[in-house]
Length: 620
Image (cartoon, rainbow, N blue to C red; front, side, top):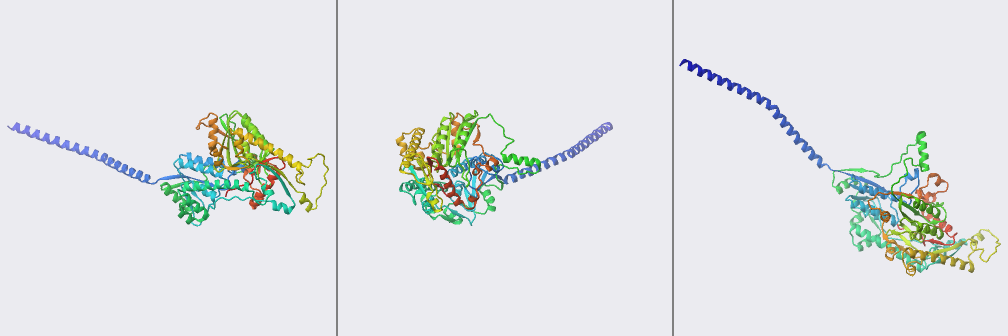
């Protein structure tokens, strides 16, 4: 009995010992689990904090906005090589900057600062089209201007929003053409302009032979101005979603304060330059704006210190590009014909007027034709015409080229400018291009009376009935006038015959559109003088297509004639191409324009026949 109790007691003690050991093991295990659970809790809390941080970061949105300034009358031509060329910007380069912003995935919008816009309708159309491509890419474009004329406003209205300070003024007074007549001055000086013309509407000589417009001249000029005015009203009405009637009434008012322009729906916001970033935040619906100043503008290294700096300066002045190398890749040549057309080499005048020399352009066309990597050529024309001979020489060279040649008309491609264009396979014009003026004018300015007034006399010994044909001291005799008129009529016949052939049109039908009549690009398209309304970009795409290349196929651009360097400019090059104004132009631009016209016409009328626009037309 005693033994059984001892065994039971021992068993009970053993069970108690096991339970104590198990509890101790549990306590030890609990102690191990506690820091692991605490670490898990801490990690969960950190994850919650990270998630909150990401949500907070998501609330702060940012946008990159390209800032591009348009300032000055942007030139059409290739520009100047070297330092001065680096500091200037032409139309093509500006359009390329806008297109780059449209394609740049890191750019969310564009701020267009309008300080002075080109006055030509062709250049405005090019820039408006580039703005449109940015908007088509889904990016907002905001125009900011202190004050605005018609040119600036036509660019601004193409944007998503227009901003002006409260003190700004918007001037859209309509369209005006002013023709200056010199006959009264010539009468006082004793100078006589003895001019002939072929084409009832060819009024290029009227400023020198009349004191007012002839009925024919007035009729055609009114037609052109009506066309420009209609285009202006249509653009503003479409851009601002306004009725045409309201737009015409606002144009009749002509000048509006920024507040009045906003109330009328012509602009969107009254704000100063320092407030534009806040406006962009609202437009783009973001919290922060990063403004990329001078987006896409080429950088110029102006550190010319030391020996290497001097060598770099000389290379830039000479137009030497040490990085440039020839390429075997396909190219499209872009040949610029900008300015009045003359025989010989392209030059610039004393008053800053660049000329299109037949010798220079023929050489450029041959270079493009002979270059195996050039698959097509685009001829960019911005010219009122000029020498009949020079125009015909360039036309002939164009027709000899077996590669596709596409004409792209800028602000003006009239008379001789149209003559060289009609030799191309296809003609693109802007809606506001001034073109046509198919006619011939010729004659001379006799200064004999002026010489008499200042006491200058001369004696002449001549042989031959018409020996005095080119004399600048006397007017034409009846016999000389007959000879001169016959020569001009033959030039006119050549002009109309070649134009009809180029346009695949009956000569009689074409003559109905000739006679010196001037047309807008839109009107010219309707009557068949041009093929398409489009920009330089459209013409380049058409050239690629004509060469069998796809729209997305890569092609380099070869710009010709090659820009002249500093020393070419200094010793007789084309300074006007660089955008540098002459002293007279900078001080008195109105006087400079008249002097340019007179100098150009003096040089033209030294030749037998001229294909020149009746007058300088600038739309402001």
